[in-house]
Length: 317
Image 1: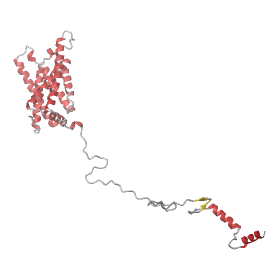
Image 2 (image 1 turned 180 degrees about the vertical axis):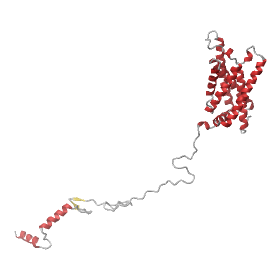
Image 3 (image 1 turned 60 degrees about the vertical axis):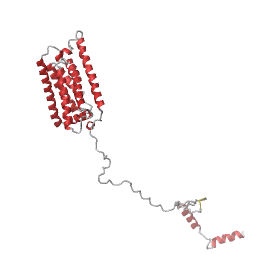
Image 4 (image 1 turned 90 degrees about the vertical axis):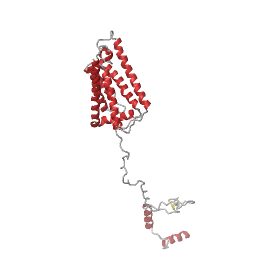
């Protein structure tokens, strides 16, 4: 009891240990309202806070503590793109020139054998079809409908082989063929200067076909297609459609439609249709397909020689 009384007097009257009760209560409230910041190594609420590592042992890389002032972000790296120099193409565009239409490109080069093989092959199958159809109407004239008729008699391939045929007829037929070829050649020359699309198609086709040929080959590629095409289109299509104006127009339009391709465009097809109608008119007017054959062959040869004169860089062997 004596000891307890001494402790009580010490707490009440000792100036260093005396703390009023109200002060203790106010301090308790302030401690509860304000967050307590724990310093490294001190015990807060019964837990020991972790001391942040200022530097990783054994490494030169420093790890900043959570209380360090945040550093400013590093500047963004400079862009590697450079400004376009003078003469460079703008962004999003190509420096290559725009491609033109496919028909403006030159045709691939071919060899002499390829040209002659194509010419002979086309002539063979077209002429073969024409002969078979015409002979079928001849041998089937007694069983076929009258509307079909005998094409060999309606429009002979060579009228001189079907008597009666006078020598004067031969001269007149030759004159018609020459006049038709001259008309085609003159008109073609004028159109080459006035119709760029037609000129471009003619140049592409002739350059591919004529470049590898010799002078003797020029006659071959001019005559053989004329024989086959006229035998089929004028010798078969014209009589199949009555042998009159309707047959002439149908054969001409079909002839022109088949001239699209191989570097030849719609302009060339239109020209071929008109020329086909002219050849059909000559054949029907003279009653002789050979007139159209002769005119076609002469016009082909004249067209080739004219083109070679305008293109001296192409030399026939």
